[in-house]
Amino acid sequence: MGGNDKKAEIGKNLQRLREKNNLTQLDLAEKIGVDLLQVSQWENGVNLPDTENLLKLSKLFGVSVDHLLLQNKGKEPYKEKEPFYNEKTEPSNFSRGNKITNEMNRFPFPVIPAFIYLILGFFFGLWNKGWLVFLSVPIYYIIAEGFSKKNGKIRDIYPVVLAIIYVIFGILYNVWHPLWIIFITVPLYYWLVDLINRK
Image (cartoon, rainbow, N blue to C red; front, side, top):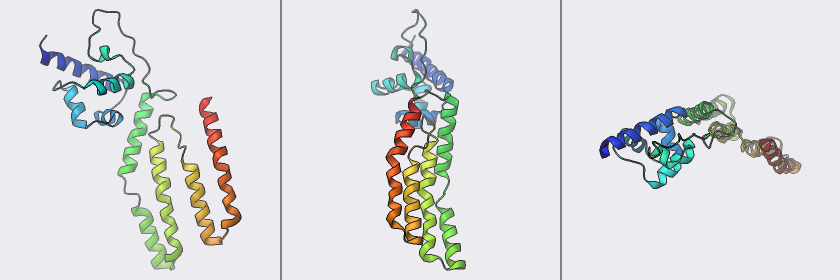
């Protein structure tokens, strides 16, 4: 078999593994940190992944490097393992989570609080306090990133929400003290989340 034929066959194998794990070429490129063009060239047999990327692909798909390069033909069939990110969720759910994250990141969410701020300012004169609507921006993007996490938990949103509550109530009602005490709950929150995730 010629070199080009071998590359084409390996490319088809990579495509099969990618599709089996419900990943698009873009998903795969993002997961292993390469350009979309590189993934396309691998699958089309233009060139092969280097050693570093072969190891990443091996870990991602749960197969050996030999299996990726079709060097185990004639041997006992290699049993593919669970993909490394698939601990409690199906690959399709994980892939869907990435798509939701990408769509949310593409959506120009900051325009919405900006529009609300202008309405509050022009119609209600709340220029000084209306800016608080912009605190919704970090929460939005934390939620967006939460969909792409392998455990599906939006783990880091709690302290951000506390900080926003603290600022809002501090500015509106001047209760900086003793409201700061709510931050004592942050370590307890992380302890409970880790405890739940270990079960």
